[in-house]
Figure 1 (cartoon, one colour):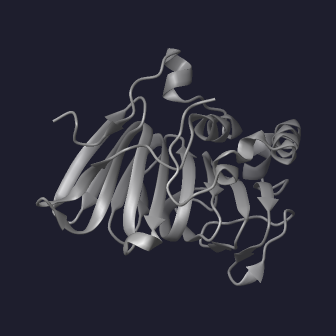
Figure 2 (cartoon, rainbow, N blue to C red; figure 1 turned 90 degrees about the vertical axis):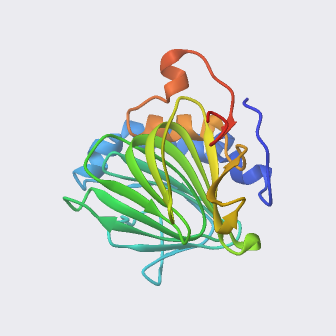
Length: 238
């Protein structure tokens, strides 16, 4: 089990992949055709739903399908894992986000995170982005964790767990290429002259990304290489 640091999150939120209900749901997802079946719309693309969630103002149930263009809201103590095309998402409790349509109904062009947190794995494809109040992330094919820190004036936290992303926070821009967790804060106001500042890896685990990658037929960078690096703040390489 990888070591992880929690800030205003609970162990239960980051250890969802250990629950028997998720393991059973993931096995059923795979046995019924996985993301290929969901892409063909022959089954729901919801892998697991725990607690209360809403889509476009209506209560979400496991048999429903989340489509691009939908607004998703999760309640307290809730947890949602779903797949759209070659991207998988784990939505934390008390989150609000929209998934906007790309080149097809089964392609996400933009994930707009208004509150809460999402871990996600993205396969290669066209232009995709994640947007928060303070940060825009251009996705090239990667595993990431994004959180809006409500207790810190909606400051954003972002970790490029592996892959390459383009970060834009006001006048600050950076291309991050990582094999093992490169993390940032996107500040509401400049800190030491910067809006992008280094952060430690918080509120997510290696295993979460591994399970999300598995749902879309992928492996993380550290699974492929067989080794893990050092989790680093985003500007430590400068």
